[in-house]
Length: 393
Image (cartoon, rainbow, N blue to C red; front, side, top):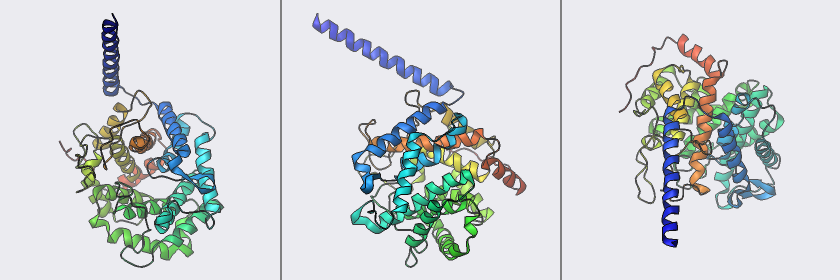
């Protein structure tokens, strides 16, 4: 009797799982809209978990402003506010901003993220702090004192000599795409985005012009040696900081990236990392993923490519079809190692970034008066032909 009961229970469990998988497949393939509320709930929950994770804890009761969870959250969560008709910051946003502000105000007393990598920690944090505060101030049109202080810290930590002159010392744990040997270039692109989005024409401040020249020189000097994902970062930076690249240079990156779009309409991070290999020897996941697709579509929108252009339209369609029905997130794949437990804290870092950039792409698509709409007018006025590249099958 007990044996039969176990068999029945196991069979019932299999049926439940099977039905759930069919439901997920049908909804993900046939859904015509995405779920902003579910995405917001996932992002809030994950930011809350990150802020309370012991390994993210830092002195003065603060936590690390991570490239995979906290930074994408800070960029994406405000974009959901209009869609959800919210009138105030979420508690997780408020906590994040308070944390960044506290560290900026106590910059000289507060300890770096990693004592054994003090210079790299300072350089990384300075750029991230400036980007977060500038992105929020851009929504008010007023550059607050805390953001100005964060920019001062950023310029103080910029490298003025050596091969990486113009960039920042950057945390490196041999992890792509944000903490690898080529990640100082990613950090420099973020710095350019921060300067470009800062309100009140901060980019024209006389005191920062020499710093800006060093940054521009570095980004253009090292661009040819970069992986495709870093060239996407460069395109993003060029949409924020006008004059960073020529029109021909921007178009070259667009051509390169569009040629890597997969037959299903998405992009795969593995195709953007050059010769990168996982440290456990397992093969990179070649499937389309939420991080690569969301980030690329968002950057193409910022560049000014119409939402009706075939590649962007197919990318947006992929994002709509591939939001999870449980949890509201998009999946990302670690390029560093195979994650055997997909529900662990670390395994979901790529999902955090994937969800945030998918949200940015989809909310940009829904705002007719957004910066992307302005960029589209600029793109059309440039006289460049309508893009109609063959997709990479």
